[in-house]
Length: 245
Image 1 (cartoon, rainbow, N blue to C red):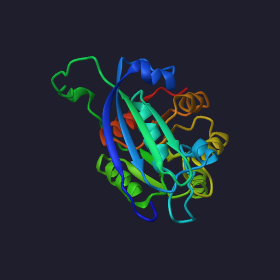
Image 2 (tube, rainbow, N blue to C red):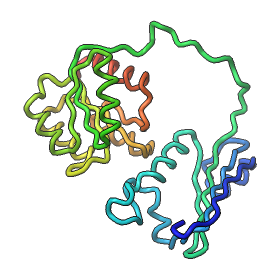
Image 3 (cartoon, helix red, strand yellow):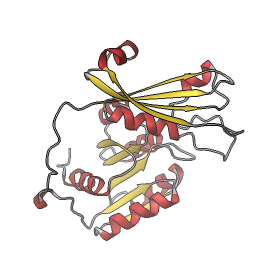
């Protein structure tokens, strides 16, 4: 809303039958609907079709990454929910987030089994991440867990490091949205260099079909950001410990 206005957030409960009129694959009996409405400039039909694409933005260069709505979409879909949008130019925008209501009663918190807790190691991990703060957090997390960390902020730098230190690197942890050369392209080129590369790809936008494609292409995993420290440590350890194919 470049000229100001009112932002409204409303929650309500809606039956699954209503959600299925918009999303036939919806299975839950009830959904929580979160409605976010603004009084901004609105969107035309072409923009509405693209707003959930990673890195699509209507802002000028340097004014926005275009990841916000893609991340929202990924999180909601990751919880078996749906996102709908209604908008017209000069009349504002309404976003509708539908999250399934669990029919199961709340259970007591599960105390993690120490034997299955995430563990560290002494191997070398290559992190490819263009967000400096996130890169530093990952580096500290892995180094305090015993790993040696190599890092790159773009795809081209990552390939140079991998070519020169391939034999040392146990796992590559790569963001998908990288400057100069995207995460998918980097993975493919690493596969050409070393068909047995162990790579974990990550994105704020997680589509189950895309994940299946990545795994079929040889990636060890395709996970959704933001990273959860214990989970990423555990997944890295699992990938390292997998028998060589």
